[in-house]
Image 1 (cartoon, rainbow, N blue to C red):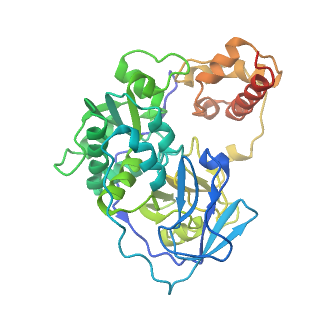
Image 2 (cartoon, helix red, strand yellow; image 1 turned 90 degrees about the vertical axis):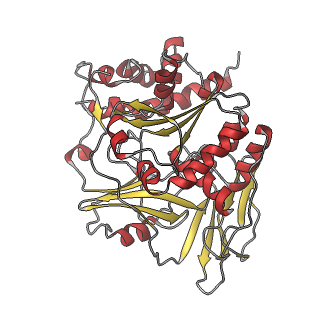
Length: 414
């Protein structure tokens, strides 16, 4: 990667706050594209629900109410719980015992509703079913998205549940090696503490996308994984700090995955919150003093590289690691220009792929084994699009290309 995108920062992470939110409702989408599985409601129209009650489930995941109230099901695609402030909430959750055997962990994780909270939202139960034999557990705290720092805040201000989740997994899977992957600049801000996760430190470059699983695995193994290789196939399980935090709270408090730690970043504002999943983004920004005053303001959920623009009424999801409030810059308004063959996209790609060549073949619908292999390798980090002086929507082309190849393969299985 010869044109790095810096992602480091030198500030101590802000403490974690639990803001008082004035909530009318919580919204829980059922879209399979979000959850990677088809959830079926287990509640009916008008049912009363309590905090932590299961709303919907599938074999891989359960979705719980993060607010007490009454259920409305909208178009079979979203469960909304209208908050009833006077309805008593559970003051404590039943104690849980972690599974002793690896085979029992997927069901445990599905029941608590754990997903990849580093942003992927991939059901943890599916990931753990493929992790029958692992020797290394990697805690991914690299957070290479510019400006994002919620995992570092969890390690600094809430290390106990992170350590509890790590210890439980290490014991159940007889892990021989635990690794905490961090940016080089973060090591000085994260001193080892007795109540924090005990793991060897792996320093990754302070540039985007150094936190990608594929690049961490490359650093640990000393060689690049073959195309299509998953970390668990090499005996390595990678999990985010936020996922371990949620798991630790399940073990220590009996609490299912109801909450999302996230950063709110706006002009003059940088705060770290723990908020209920399903609350509207507007309420979180209002509590942070970051509610946009101009209708032209852009709100991005996730990171500035792989995040997405959202509406203020959108709900916070389990993968919402940050909320950015941005003034629309000139780049947002520019249209694509012809490629000038500068090679910036090639220089920026961390895997040495050929982005403009891939995009051209996709747009011209010219399939080839080379294109399919490169699309399979690409993890849509967006580094190529970020440095393109012609503002070519390369990542958008790759998303379309992956779908096109998938549809083409399914229609021609031979």
